[in-house]
Length: 409
Image 1: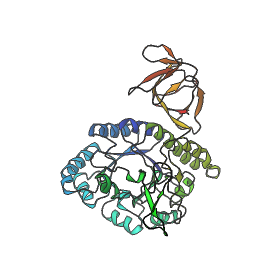
Image 2: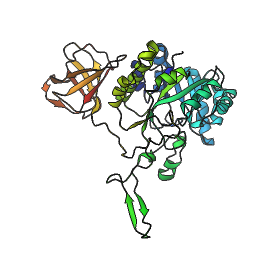
Image 3: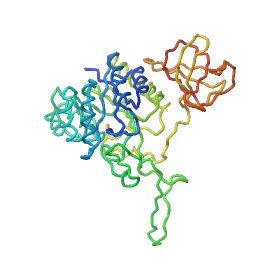
Image 4: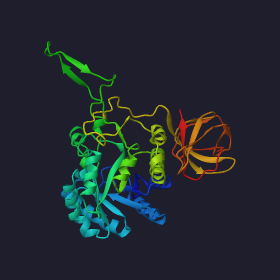
């Protein structure tokens, strides 16, 4: 039984550091114009720093160049490929056959990973990409566990397999969707998705016995969310996934916050490690409890357990968590007064939880006193009025820089 890689998203250098701190073996990121999350801005300098930092601590970085490229994109793709080769990135994620050919020419020292956008849902397709230079295939999220196992079993041992285990699902087939381009002139296949499937729509039906009389179909006053999907969560299925021999377990979310990364990566890190140590004692409810604290939509296993599953639409269009929120990040620990960069309003008396790397149960405590970080004046509350707003408070346990704190609402 091989221990799979835990792969986390990194929308910035700072987010990459959080992902590594909370247990990711590798992160994936991409440039602003050549990956499918163009609004997760990772410039060349950030990418370089992320790769250097990762290699210093024995971790890996994969760069996404997974747009479906137009001819005018290829000059930049060649330039990017040469830079990635020089930086010694651990892998490049591509979906377009033309981009793959450029990577083989310009970045011969870099492993090629085939994106989920390539719709790999069969061993035949996986073997095709392997024969064309792929080191890893990222399987389509539409697959069941039996189909995944079949691909693992019927592909070469040297070909690695990667699957998504957590995060947002897309209305389009393996993420290939034209809805955003059609409605907002923002192409999902060129990295600028407007997330049209998350919008509220006004839908009407015509009465059978009264032609022309339209009746609204509404979930709430905004309309209905007919395209919006729940979020994937396979924490219960971690034992099966490990046993079937998948090489890398991927978390979605390059646009997510540091709080999301800390919570989700830490939960899956503990789940994987605990199962490897004691398979018969695996209890997914412990990790799910932590995941529930950060979720903003309902959770689903999609088609993993049942190809006929229909329970994956989020008709409420939820985008918030009613119970917990990002409290802050530890900037400097001090036995008396530690400095915290706050992310939401804090009050004396608030209940906070420190998310401890490598420990599934957070440490809960109440704020007894607050001090303004600049004036040392004691205060009753503080709001994140500007970027990098700092406050001082007493932390009841020894903490480290960049540990994340959540606030109970």
